[in-house]
Image 1 (tube, rainbow, N blue to C red):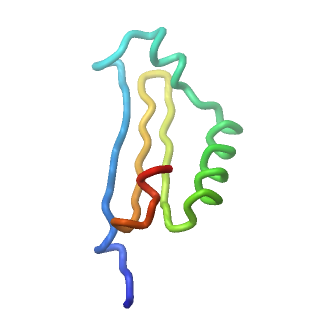
Image 2 (tube, rainbow, N blue to C red; image 1 turned 135 degrees about the vertical axis):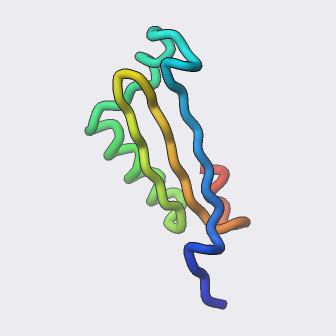
Length: 75
């Protein structure tokens, strides 16, 4: 069976200044080294997972794409 990006499900999890006060956003802010480490660990845990982290002073967002039933949703 051939898989394509069309089969993947996209999930987004995030917090921004619209949703949370500064003290909460500060806890969820990732520096570049932490982001790199997090993405590396996720790729080891679930090789089929595609992930992107956006972390600024106003928001942190996780974008995840994975095949349904791949186990990536547990990551």
